[in-house]
Length: 439
Image (cartoon, rainbow, N blue to C red; front, side):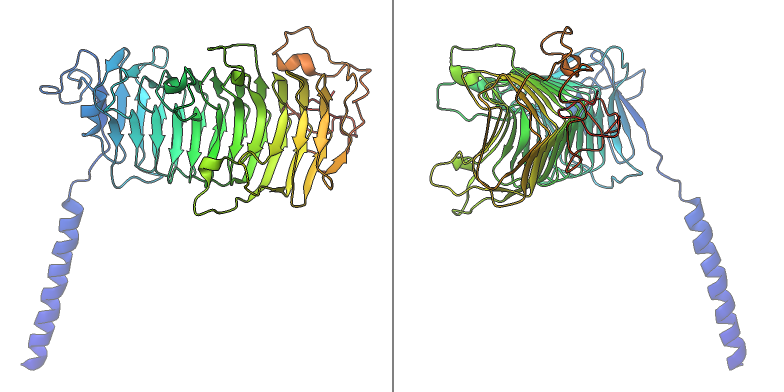
């Protein structure tokens, strides 16, 4: 009898297990959904469908979950509250996507300079923000989580930064976007307010900024500000930003700046001469130091950039008084710098801690190159490189080399990038050329 009872119990357990498995199979899966927003929608009576869309992005964002897509129809959305994305469960396979419903007629979220609205705040990983413009927020878009992609947008007329990667905006990308006329709190430059970067990084690593136009912001154009590592700033057009177009600020490590077109047209929002921007600056700021720490600035690689008519070309120096600052293990190679204003240097490196190399740069119509002792300096050219010209002063093609250029086949392969400004393989003729372009 005892054996039979055990066998009966085993049989009962098998049946129970089968029922549990079947029950699990019957649980309906939660499918990703598409939510629509339109200017003629209704937050109270809408259900988020294409025929009954919601009216505000702020309200619709409450309905979005991991794997969902929000499609925003054309028009201007006057929002009075910050648009926050703070959801759980997102992953590389369950992204949240916010996109323009019609890429040919992109919508705009207008925060109307509402002081209570910080703008768009992304505190969720694996978000794609595609084609939805933002204007007049306190900040435009703040990224405070990882694996966020922002693309195909305009961000403009924001009080402070246009886009900021802030306290954890790691492994994220800003691409194919226009960031302009931000930092409006500082338009008067009265010496009271901060000078924000239009595209800012704070304690955010592995950030890529590429194929953007960043211009006429009343603060520095783009760059990591504090506590950042491994930024990639490439293939952008950056111009007419207040004081500095591209700023690597304080304690950056492992930053690559390549194939950017950087210039100054003479645009002056005020009569303050500080508006004239440097091309690329690496420096420290007194406001950046905490607990009297000394910054480490290393692994900065500046290559294949074209810098035109800026106050200074490429400079690295201690900006904060009485603070130690040294650049180390960095390269400034194969850049083309044409004209500086107010008698500034084309390339300047004031102090270093070893491993700094300045090679194969064209520096023309500036006050020259100023390097601290021990900086490795080779194959830099300050004479007439015989540019093609003819395509306009701020056109990158104007700075290609003629066949008779003394910079043709005159460079060195040491530290040379693998391609040129046009992404063509370097060298093209067996020997590297000096400057950003290969002949």
